[in-house]
Amino acid sequence: MTRSLTLLLVLLSHLCVSAAGEGARRPNILLVITDDESWLEKSAYGWSKVATPHFDRVAREGALFTHAYTSAPSCAPSRASLLTGRNFWELEQGAFIQAWLPTKFAAFPKLLSDAGYHTGRIGKGWGPGVFPPEGHGDDVAGKVYNSLKVEKPEKNVSAIDYTANFRKFLDERKEGAPFFCWLGIIEPHGPWAQANRVKLEKKFGVSADDISMPGFLADTPKVRGQRADMYYEVKLADEALGNALAELERRGELENTIVVVTSDNGTACDGSKASPYDWGVHEPLAVRWPGVVKSGRVVDDFVNFPDLAPTLLEAAGVAVPEAMSGKSLMPILRAAESGQIDPSRTWVATGLEWHGELPPECRASRTIRDGRFQYIIRYTRNGVPTEEFYDLGNDPDHKKNLAGGDAFASERNALKDRLKAHQMQTGDPRGTGEMKLFDETRKFVETRKAAGYGD
Image (cartoon, rainbow, N blue to C red; front, side, top):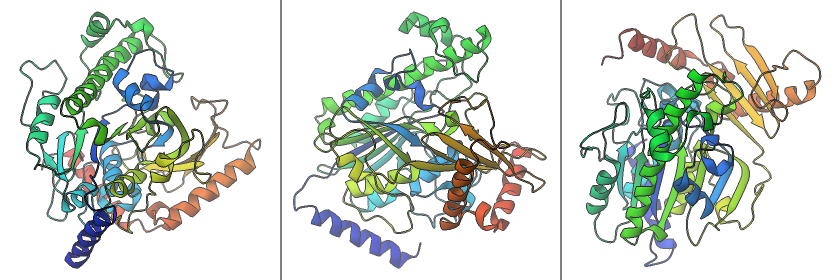
């Protein structure tokens, strides 16, 4: 982005703020994003028996989204998409984990900062990756507040004291300034300590036998134990959210704060994280904003991570860059009803380029999904793509690939054509065939992988 364009955006931001009403108090924003958690693992969705009361509170006092999707089932491109308001494939090197996020793509926390917001990041921001001069820095989500640690961290659990660092972040805010905080809770990212299952039962009264099991996983004592280990960290993450809400209440700030809670990609298990299936890309999302978002709403529109950046910028009265391809959710948030709000939001496209694999393996794919069906195209090393097609209305666990049959040929072809059109419209290299940059970046990250990710 040129300097003149940056200055223009800042000027427009201040004009938008003034237009919102002189003396009007701009909302604070708390964005809470956990690491590796699929949507059904929040109890508000009615599937999991492990209660997440603080997420459920946000959903109950605001809006619960039933079809929220990350752009990619891998943390770095997922978070890059959220930060920039663009599909991950529109982000050049930012489409890859372990590469970098080019500065040419504006990140919404910086635009909020330029407009007078006190911005900060706690826990995990964008990454993992590298920070060359042409890439955003480690503070792309805001000034880093990770210095305060818990005295006795639990095994395989982050030592970052989320609550203490949140207090420090709030204490450093200039009087009268609105804030944006990115609370990147590292849990429930693996590896998990085996003692977690014992603590889950002792502290929260939930045994491995109580765990809900996805239909695509083997229901064995070993897998149940692993799921229990993970769910203990789901509970820890929910407690961290609850502590942040309590701190805002204590300071009298909660009612003027937009609270957004989500996760970056699916659970770390086969068929979820780094996969094109629903458990890899379907994320929890709840938004609480008193006075704007009516409580108790359940929204069925398909929404995607690129939509969040323009939403939060518009909510703050900051100009949304034209380069952002996501669409603001403000009309949905302001609506009073539940169900399908925007009749155009009936599908979503996601994908992946790379998640640590080395030749000859290739995980690159693109996916499109509507209310019933899902079409997947996988891009192989030999240049011959393969296809998958699922009737998720009857096969939510993706057990029967219908791509080779004729039963739903028209539905399959319709989704395939829509995906191709979307790829061309958004400049996806997998659609346009302009793969030079992606091929070079793949070689870069593969070299980093082979070297153990040393700088």
